[in-house]
Image (cartoon, rainbow, N blue to C red; front, side, top):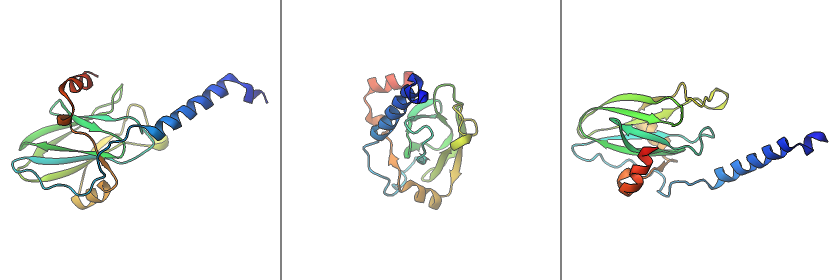
Length: 170
């Protein structure tokens, strides 16, 4: 009976209830679910970077940097399309806080597209530092299958410049 009267238990229950409520009503992208990868834009390299849905870091969008510049965000169960000019580019996913930055060097080619998945350990192997996270290359057929249930995140071009500066300041 003492455990049920404990303030710690009550506070824990309230915190858990609040977390469940926040996860249930968290801001989901209003864009449609992936239908089909659009044809690559001429003279650009289309990169599709996606993150599957997981309870780990559910409400935490990750920043996506291309050549050190903020290019978008990768939310839970979402993807971002990054049109790049031909050449070598550095792609980074930044979970935030003290988490490690995951980096991949990509070589863009004219008129092609590539698919990458940001993966990190979940469950008991999950670490707040995101140790073990990677940006992995995916075959087009495998990626298109995974993208079917994912939402497209808002591109930075659609966000007003003032909000963009605030977000980049972190």
